[in-house]
Length: 324
Ligand SMILES: NC(=O)c1ccc[n+]([C@@H]2O[C@H](COP(=O)([O-])OP(=O)(O)OC[C@H]3O[C@@H](n4cnc5c(N)ncnc54)[C@H](OP(=O)(O)O)[C@@H]3O)[C@@H](O)[C@H]2O)c1
Image (cartoon, rainbow, N blue to C red; front, side):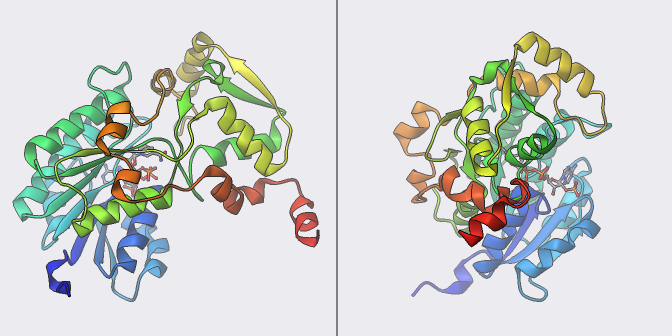
């Protein structure tokens, strides 16, 4: 029997209060780890407490832009998970500060503590990307590999699940608008991956059952275009909406205008990211650096979307379905 003491006991999860974070925290708590959730606003992380036993989950304040706060957050930790990423910049929360400097700083703090490291990046991380998001994700990965060569790096495609920012956003838009935009004509291909499967991959990495020092690309079982994603969502919420192709040039103008808002719906950087397909590479498939390679059978959109998008269905439809 494997001695329980050989497992890492305390895991610091940077970004544990976010969308992916709450699923990672739940997966780790279920395995018996003590989880320290490090984020800027731990006072807003109260929703995590019911995911574990009393005292098992401890929120602490840390900001990736301040190295000293990271050392404090990883003190005594056996493993560190970094889930911090941003989709748009605001003030000092720049792509460079968070995804490049911040990724390196977390890796340095983990190394100083002698802890293992799991770093969550994204498919689209590419030093030659035209988007700041993709470039800084790639530089963050490079820094992590340099500082902690044994780190496991996970690159998910677009992630779906109860609090996701993609399907929820468009389902919400479909409640009020007769049209939905197909950025760049809606031909960009995605490989949507269930948040629970991403969390399981992180937890296996923390367990130490994932080969160290490698980059894994996490995608779901299906590749869908942007248009097909919206069609799938509309089927689930039982609405008909006109899908309007928005050419790239027009999307960039929209991104420039909307990008000036405090919490923008779209930015020019996001439009640039959408110009490239977001799917698992042939090389990762060939090497088994995928969810399947980790022994995880990924969930389909059809199985999961109805479990949380039902609330966007037409009033009365849900009750009619239940009565049927
Ligand atoms: N969601 C997707 O579809 C998707 C796809 C591919 C890759 N990813 C990657 O997966 C990771 C998790 O994404 P997510 O969707 O869960 O993001 P999220 O919901 O926005 O959560 C981000 C987390 O990071 C924390 N955070 C932000 N800035 C911080 C800073 N300067 N210092 C410390 N903590 C900070 C936030 O808490 P506070 O605001 O309280 O600090 C929050 O806990 C990211 O690296 C993202 O790039 C996500």
